[in-house]
Image (cartoon, rainbow, N blue to C red; front, side):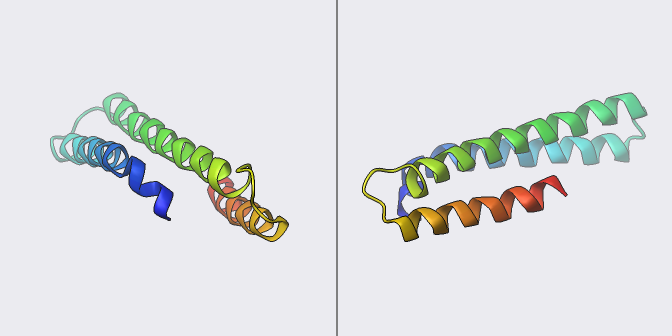
Amino acid sequence: MGHMIEKKGDLLARVKRIAGQVSAVERGLDRDAGCAEILHLVAAVRGAVNGLLDEIVVDHLDEHVAKPGLSDAERKKGAEELMTVIRRYVK
């Protein structure tokens, strides 16, 4: 996806923050942190991943479904790709 290159730096920064949050969960488990603390850490990871997913979904919609000039076939393919991801996500 050529259009992803424009946001690559921001997306990688988000992924690195998520990796840091996952490491915090691991550290909490290693030091026997309480379940409430672990729940908060995991909820933060989930929120960060959801934010990343949201950003990429919106970008996909803009570039592969709503972008002016796309053919019907291109729009259909973009929509199908998105439906596949959404179905996988909501399981």
